[in-house]
Picture 1 (cartoon, rainbow, N blue to C red):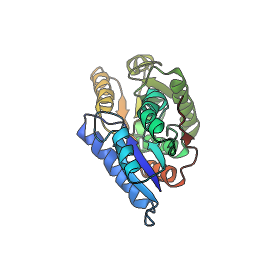
Picture 2 (cartoon, rainbow, N blue to C red):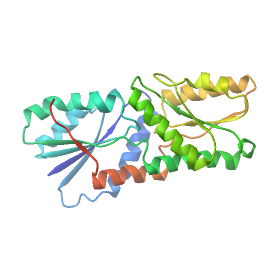
Picture 3 (tube, rainbow, N blue to C red):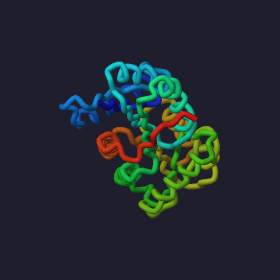
Picture 4 (cartoon, rainbow, N blue to C red):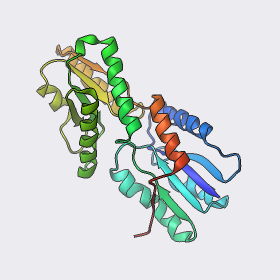
Length: 251
């Protein structure tokens, strides 16, 4: 028997958590679990229960001997490289006959980039004055340089799709800050929060946007990605096929 854990970041923001729960409920409803060979549950990296270790233990106690983690994050920074392996370490050492697999991040997936392009196109439909405006591709950010290179790759791919400049920027970590990129763009700009869910990061982006608009800047902020049907499609296909999952090994 196999288990699939749908792993969210976790936030103190109830709306963001509710959006994650709603998305995983839609994904789970599309999975075929009728034969009882696949058990599906959700858990969190931090801030909300159940955490990964507790959720995995439930599945182990039920007899699962292969556990797949579909992680609802965009880029492979510290959570994917360190926190999740850390959560699995004790369990993997204790249950030598169990295999653990970790899914890839979503940030450069075809479905996510298409959803982002459609978010920008929605803005242009309702705000045609921004037809020549660059897109500010805003991520939370991290201290991981490799993750930032993945952000840059996603922004270049989106630029190719939209045939317009797409400027990557972050709230924290490596890479140019949103406020600095705003100062460097003199005219109108479209802010694209490259985020899955509502939360404190989105509110920070919206606050920066509002402050700049008060100074006379022409800015419009697109919606985050999480509610777009293509995002659900991506996570459903990842959960259903479980391709490109990496097997966890104790180091």
